[in-house]
Length: 328
Image 1 (cartoon, rainbow, N blue to C red):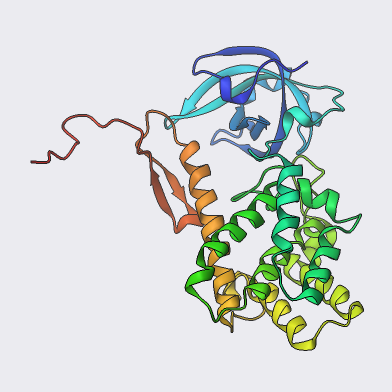
Image 2 (cartoon, rainbow, N blue to C red):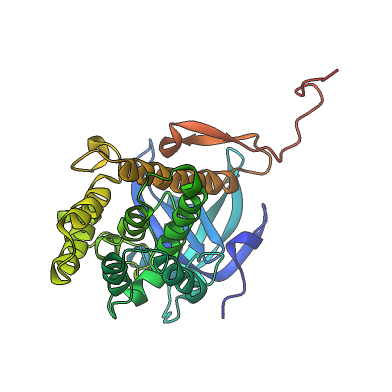
């Protein structure tokens, strides 16, 4: 039974035989040619970087160092540049069948979010489109995965039910804009938001702790697979051609620019709104995650490539009197 969680670890704490999942791992050599490992380990409460230095390798089952494995670890909580880091002294393979303790999850209940999603789909006034969207998200193969799939391997919404939360965040933002844009087709926008990332159900292996890309995910990508999914259902339902093409355009263009993987750039107000609402949700969640990763004694985090290489300010840290601006 798991008793120690990442969020409760304290600097200087020594622990013995605690279970954690391996999310990332790499092997390298130091300047003297000594082998060491860098790991990201964690559980449902969070993740921490960790090191296995050469002098500890005799107490480590290196065959167990695989992404997605749950292992028994003994070590000490140290820090590197103000950020907690675990120094692993012993690592052993274990038989672990229940993964619930090792998967970070949305703060919201998956079933509640799914019910809310179905209610949002009901707001689509054009019945043929509403039926197609509803048919897709209630499909017996799609629905169970949609409820629990992460939206990414890293960066934003990379947790259990993250994809569903991301969609609902976007729908909430869109709803707040509707009264200001009477000429925008919010049926199309709502459908596009619901469908834009559904290809990730095929792109990512959300049942694996490390959330690797699937073969088809690497070969085709979620934009193509999501577009194909909608097109197949739309053709079967004989959906109006212009409506079908418009929704497909929203899915295809949602990354905004060609450099980010979209084959076309947004060419309608609905597509422009979608790509920017998508960016708001993704960037806000990335910033929230980066803030939580800052060491409590650090005023700024590390540079974040996905936030234009900026350093997030830890506003909760109290600066010394000499660093504070005196207001008069």
